[in-house]
Image (cartoon, rainbow, N blue to C red; front, top):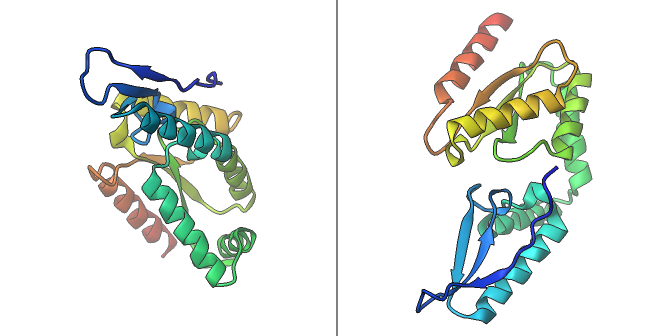
Amino acid sequence: MPREFKFEIRKDKTRTTSAWWIDIPPRYSETGRRQKRFFKTLDMAKGELQSLKARVANHGISSKLLGAAFEEQAAAALALLKEAGLENRQLVTIVADYIEQREKLRLVFVLIDSRLEPQKIDREFLAWLQGTVRPFALIFTKADKLSATKVQSNVAFFMNTVFAGRAEFPRIFTSSSKTKEGRLEILKFIEEMLAERK
């Protein structure tokens, strides 16, 4: 378990403008890589520091990589659910019922962020999914954000942690919507699954 990172404001004395900065390690960064965010004034840096600390305190590691734009999209999605008279719990029930009862459902793809350590919600969902006896495969997303070696290392750690003791692992893919990595392999796998069920 990585130690908790202490955010600090620092000053680069060699810079004449935007001298104040905050060092952000990969697990808290929007890009999945270490970042230095520079600010014109100390007050601007303090504002960002408070925002970072609040996000980490309120959302935990599964949300630490969300940028402001994604937070706004999540808030908008929740607002739409409310307008439709649905709450998170009801949505979970709808998805669970669909997975368990849909006879023509051939396979469930579970998307996992390749930059993150195994999350509690991922473990719980996968444990539940195994109990449904529904075939599933894992797609590790955002592979373009890390080196190929780091992606392989993260995937291996995830599989050995979440599926420890299992004789067989589910099928896995690495993907990137940006570079299209994994696209052809996933489409070929879908074709194979459909051909088997005919």
